[in-house]
Image (cartoon, rainbow, N blue to C red):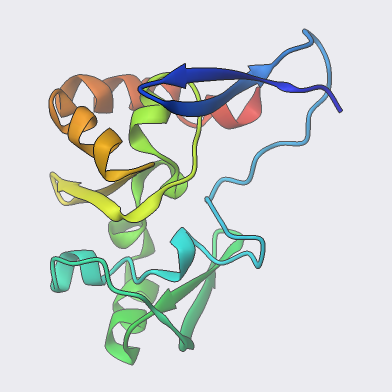
Length: 153
């Protein structure tokens, strides 16, 4: 399998398009998951909205959605997600919003989050989140334009 090109931005290595033109690559999953197929590192996506905090979910409360297992801190949060998953799931499948704005993808730290216009965005780190927040409107527009194409290269 060919190597992906990596891009270093602000001390973060982002993975981008295939290094060999025309080479077939396995597609990256639409949702950022752990090796156990757990979305957003097991954090509760609803809690960002209801508690305004990054809250770890429990294996007791889970939903299978969009090819991943999502964990929740409570039955109520699980039910809210099941009723409106697109409302609570992070943009760009939980990949780093800044990386997607740069035409690449990167993992995220669940504690590096922001809600903008009732949408959850995650970033690689707190430092990258701070950089992203300096011009969110521009980065969101770029990321919206790039998504989901960055996963298909």
